[in-house]
Length: 199
Image: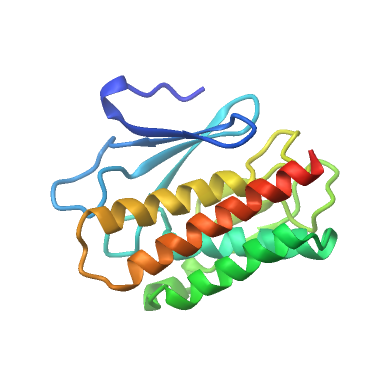
């Protein structure tokens, strides 16, 4: 488990199954738009630390919000094809609407910013279990309900919702943030319903 000083913890959220998503202020610089940069995600038996920023201008490195959105949407599209339940369809529709509101960042189109989707080592119902950008990677659970080691879609949606909520709360003058926050919350609610239907 990654050791985090108590004073660095900005917020802790939990998925419907109890997995944690911890937001930390470690190394955050004055003037940054968010009070956190690092996120620790429960992988089932341990935690993985990732750096997350609203966009490429918000911090020097890490996953951008748009990249996290792309990963969640790609995973949910696979989930919907695998098992086309209405909750999965609702989550996909909300994330597609969210993608439509998110401003383009030309730096997300650079070769080093392109997301690669790779198979994991374990047997899986998915064609990929690892999302990778440069040196950063997100290892997903090969089980649709997240009962095996790895991250879950719900954790990424919790992260996205917090990212947008905190950015909107920082009074950033971007009209798209409130609509984006709503789409992220609705996608999260749909994902919770989907997991409940298969657990």
